[in-house]
Each structure stands twice: as C-alpha cells, then as structure tokens.
Length: 99
Image 1 (cartoon, rainbow, N blue to C red):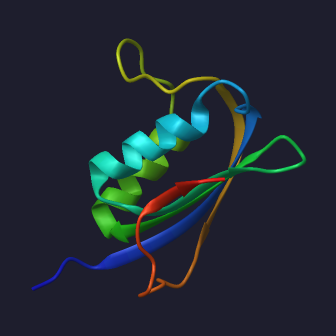
Image 2: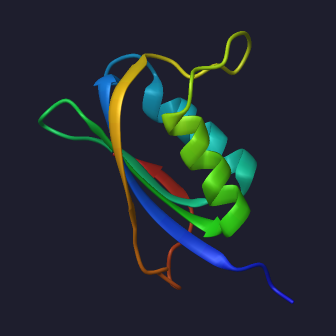
C-alpha cells in the first residue's frame, strides 16, 4: 500500500532571503524525498511548496517552522512568522526547484 500523499504551501517570513535558506530547503526536501519549489517573494518572504509522503511533508513543515537546530545542517537565517496552507496534491509534480 502506497503512503498517503500530502502537499503544503508554506510562506516563511523573517531573515530568509540572501542567507542560503532556499538551498537549505532544497537539501531537506531532497533528503525527505519531496517535490516542489522554494522561491523568494518580492515582499521578503520565501514561499515553499512541498509534496510527498504525508509524514515527510509534516517533517519538512516542522523543519521550516520549528525552533532552529544547531550544528551541521542547521536552518540558515531566522524565521519570525509563517503561514501553512494545505493544497491538493499535484500528480504531475516532480523534482524540487529553486526560483
């Protein structure tokens, strides 16, 4: 039986542009087997669209929104606030892009 799929759109606000945040997101998404994108928005936020197995998507959302980790692989920048929205799974999505 295939794992249930999920998709979340996460808007992250804070010091998240120009600090390697999107590349960190891509690395985490790849590690978790997720597809989607991370892109800078004109208002200073980063939009992250992640899709894949439900548990992996939940882990990614926690990594984006939770307290930062320390040491190797830690989340760069600083997250002040965020908004998470469930979206319909896109069956044609593949790869993880940075815009």
